[in-house]
Amino acid sequence: MGNAIDSIIKKYMVAGYFPGAVCKVSVRGEVIYEKSFGYGSLEPVLVPANEKMVFDAASLTKIVTSTVALMLITDNKMKLEDPVLNYFAEAADYPALTERLKDVTVKNLLTHSSGLIDWYPFYSEKGTFLQVLNEITGRTEKVKGVLYSDLNFMLLGEMIKRIIGMGLDEALEQYIRIPLGIDNMNYCPKDKLNIACTEFGNRIEKSMCKDRNISFDGWRAENLPICGEVNDGNAFYYFGGMSGHAGIFSDADGFTNICQLYLMGGEWRSKRLIEERLVKEAMKEQKDGRGLGWQISEIFPQGCGHSGFTGTSLWLCPEMDIVAVTLTNRLHTRQPRNLQPFRQELHEAILNQLK
Image (cartoon, rainbow, N blue to C red):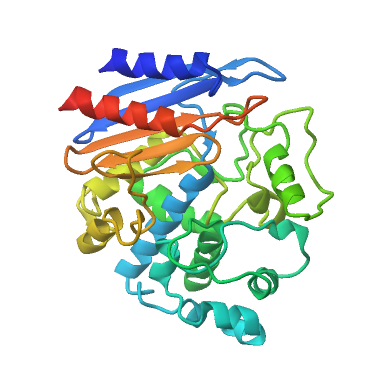
């Protein structure tokens, strides 16, 4: 199997899809493949990738957030059916927001069926999260059906903070790192020596803002790559590096443990962390390709997964007890490319090799 994975990763790396990558595959809890490729940094210093290199996880943060949410549901601190507005009493002061969220539940956030738009640069506005969200909902139409949206997990992150009375960094420590024995998973990492670089400034978001006629003058410089700071604009400029939708940095080991928790039915070292029923529901399609946090699509054959904007991905195959964590720095190029073909080819090759 190693040769097949090597070949695919090298093919896409040579084609310019990413400068570096780390891939880790386990079956029934045993690591059968772990390897690094290329470079974590091209500029200003050439830094080879290594198996313990830390990557900006981007939207893999959503899997951490949804995992914490499922733990809180297991602990009876919240419910899937809970109305989101129950956790934001001050939302009564914002008519547009109240109207948009009046029927939205925790499950709607987890399945991206809240009716909220997919993205908005909160950092271009002044005001609290709810104030800005009220402005957004007041000038946008309700989305029908499922639409993948960062706003859902921004809301979920803010809810979690209120429920447990601590910041997301503390939640990560208490609910994820300590119980799962994860060493290297953080918001706002202090040690930046072994972190893969991402974009040269927020060029993509700058273009997205321009397309929407939205102005912002606080952009990071584009002459050097971002490294050790979260790439996502909302997480960096608005939330101070910590949000429910983005902001986590991790090596492959950390996400392997989180994935393994799901394949073990929510138990870790004989301790129940998530109710088994919730674990099964999370990995099952609830609405239009969405589980509870997880995605179900052809990119993730016989199972579920999630991807991150920076070039990261997770794949779980419960039927064959497979976990595949692939971390790349696809934004650390002059012309970032879509990794969906790479992800699908890689996951299908792993599955075929193990059948």
